[in-house]
Length: 328
Image (tube, rainbow, N blue to C red; front, top):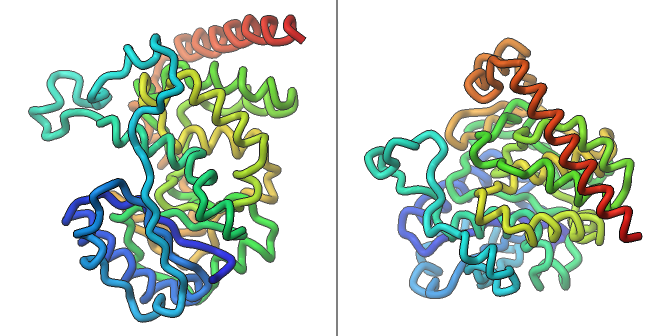
């Protein structure tokens, strides 16, 4: 058993398996030293038996421990009825408001939203992580792909630099406002219950800012702390993952940037070209102009509207804080 793990959540789908096999091969070719230093963990739902034998494990991984772990991605039973009754079978895609079916996307399923919830905090409570005492996990999606690699061992890089969170800097972007409704208000209340320092840091973090979490390196010990669990559970109890389709990407950005000092949240070293949708080079920084062009539709052009939104968030949060502090 290694001290690190590469983790996937795999659907019971032939296409998912084909993508996964490509990803594993690209890891072997382009990140050999990272791959040698990690176990493989495949999380999956029930009825996965017929897909086990379709996964092609590259020779480089044969000496590593390989775990298959079944997870439950149904709606949690602890939600209040008011939350459960408001959960849609499919959450509308934010850019397909005039008929998502016509665009080939019927919306975000409950399984997709459960995946976001799982990668936010549920994964760190799984037995395979709580008992094997891994130092780091590298999370990838099945359709992640490495185009160019590096001889660097990303786990050794993270350990030697005391990294808590590693990310692709050029892939930092904005999620759509329609899938971040009420997120910042709820997150700020959660942070205020943990630390006022975290709360004040959170005030200056844009609500829709997100890491590209389909390629991330995480320090397991930090994400198993009571701080991260309390932060995540407050968000979870609000039902936001299901009611508003909050993604793990915006939660990770808000939580990590509020709780983790800058020196411990660092971009993954240069030399890696990664593909998931678009292509991203590690070590690259987007220019301000490129960021504005890429996210113009999400940033919005009405500054007065943005100011009103910030004032509303601050007013709403202070009201919530009065309630919190009043109970102490």
